[in-house]
Image 1: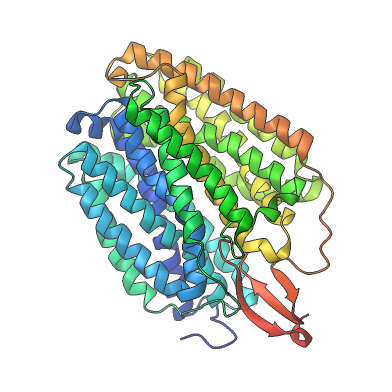
Image 2: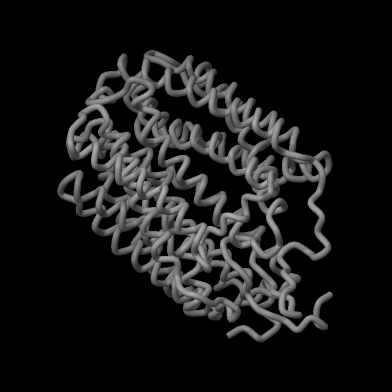
Length: 497
């Protein structure tokens, strides 16, 4: 167990905490990247069309996006380690269901259950480290978490592509079982932490309306090509759910999404940029892996490896982009970065039947990665800096949920706007034409994100008399986790630096 001062980085206890946090969040991230590569194999095996492949992704994103904020709240109340462990176990069992899925509907249901597990474990990963490590060691711990997570993201498409090619797509889900077992063993060495200042009831009504709104809207969009009573009912439920969510959050005394956080123009603008950019990313990553395999006839392994330059560029340049934004202000990087992403997407229009990796795919992927590296770190830092200190944890959770919801709606809507439906992914010429339409639309979204940054993002620093992550109230100082978690502990006011 940790002392009251916290665990020291580099000790045995610290390594156990880091292993649990890195591998726990890595399991969810790994699953997301590998499933994209597996989509053609899943479609062939289970007889899915384009809409079926959409549901394989959106089934997971619906529950993850709608419940990730309440997942953080559960950890604050009942113990971050406890909820994290429950999330890991839930994710592991849901992965087994996905691996044995006899039909598409069964797989989609399993993916939705995976999303619930992801919503429970994702907020707890960094929150546990923030609560467990000594204040002077938290920066190193989070840096290690980020670097090791990047390595896991890079390895994922290789491992998944090999498993799919050599055995079956089902192994990408069974792979989660031994990894989750290691996390469960490591988590036994993580000190428990809660937020003693939390009060009020859980925002179950808000979470319920969120799920109904996202699920109804997604169903109506994906199935819009086959209109009927079910689509109309889903559309109505989607609208009612989303409107109900806003009403509940406005009236609740303890909302999971305090709407006053959007009073900051900087915070609102940064999240609008997030919507535009992550909608483009979610839609393109869904279609690009399929395009490489169905149009260029890459193996799953080669398709996964083709995107490795994006990960390498992100690992090498993200920290530098963050430092640049800190020096010159976030407006220019956040305006230029999405436009470079858009350029990379437009270059992807050159990917077509008979294309070559070096001349057609690699230039697009490199430009795309450069734009992404210039965008992501300044965007994340701006979101955190724009929120009041009392909303530090919520700000990160909101931005995470916004990114997931944007990806969800893009995966549902972009193929329809691009003219893809039915079994188009099995016809290379038809899919290639639709893919070109999709990347053009996505490029437009990224340009819109850059324009939003020009208009809405300011280089002026927010007035911050207190250090980031502190909140004074009732004469006390509440230390908060800047990532997916409200206050960690309370100190008397005379203990504050």
